[in-house]
Length: 213
Image (cartoon, rainbow, N blue to C red):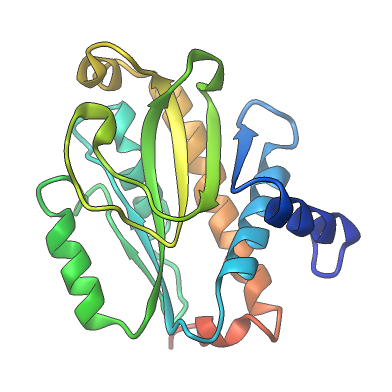
């Protein structure tokens, strides 16, 4: 979990050689530790000096319980104080199907070589409900509800909030808020911890460029 800890090194090697995706059960007693270990390893193994900033895109809408995971996380991260870390998508200003492409164009024009972390809710298998998935590469927001949007992200964090397969829009509408809130708490607090940990690592702190004045 901590810098230089052998367990984190083993996780790094494990992810590189075996999995491109890691699952974390939010109901596990060690969920926070597993999430932060995986996210720190994922970012540190993916990011390099070619990137000039980190942008978290929290996708979703506050008008649907199941799809509110992204805006809730964006709301909880709204006061981050790192110069080169930026958050898009919140309860007040959600990023969703209608404005996602416009937001991505703005990010491309405003920031130098951004490293994109895409965050979104999704539907999955019944036995994966309540799991957070992390992985390298992009996601296709809205694919679960038949919306065709461009892929987003260098890495992704998705919360499996319910099971899919039939009338997915209604399933998202009727998702339990308790699951979404628990995921939002773990993910937002985990991101804060991982950024703090990066700031303590001289090899990674330069991309954060310390705290804002």
